[in-house]
Length: 305
Image (cartoon, rainbow, N blue to C red):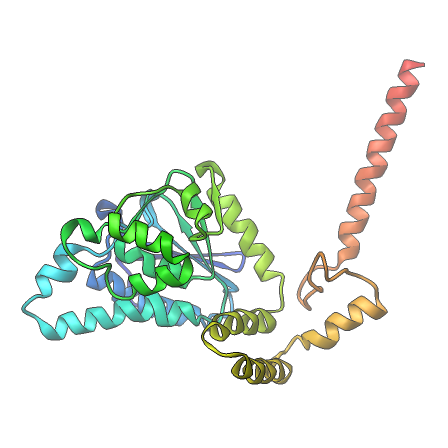
């Protein structure tokens, strides 16, 4: 990371995962101009950080984000067009342009509150895990404005239009279970399982070929706005691009491990990456456990006799 000290963002890197935390817990992580500038720079640096294989966006203090800071983002910039434009550009850049097209897999870990403008990053990331008791709310209609920036667009693209209309027009809050039901998030879990479920998902993603995973998520996002002919051409070019720039040589490596080595079944798991531990260790560990269990069972039956 850059030497510049961050105040509104915290970054923790561990085992390939970068935990990027909005850090204004006293404001329920409401987003100020400074927070937007720091998030924009942080995500830019992490995208090319060799230590990082997956990025998790979360909030410090048990809150994802209460949306934009109405005082600092709006009122204090009313008579400062230059400052207002710079803050808006940074806010939209990291919450959409960067995250939506990010080269590495991204996950939002959501708890506490996810309100208004926070729906931008919620919809931009690849996957979302939320606590059951999270409060989601598109509350803008209750205080006289439209959902901010691209929120109306990204929410209506992410969930069914009827659901988008209902929650945008009524401003009713809803919880994690409802967010999962309407397709806004991937998983709603008890709060005690939030971190473990997020780590589990991140580890599954990091086990894939980075080049193929990157191309796959880009392809799925981009073809949504293409017709069939455009999609054919785009996906053919994307497939060729993987073979040119993939240091893992994923296509040939995967075929070799499946056809020649017979070391994995692609229906159930990815091929082993070059820096991944060999599976023989796992198999031998499983055998050892089974052997110990049989030995224990044999002792019990001997006692009964």
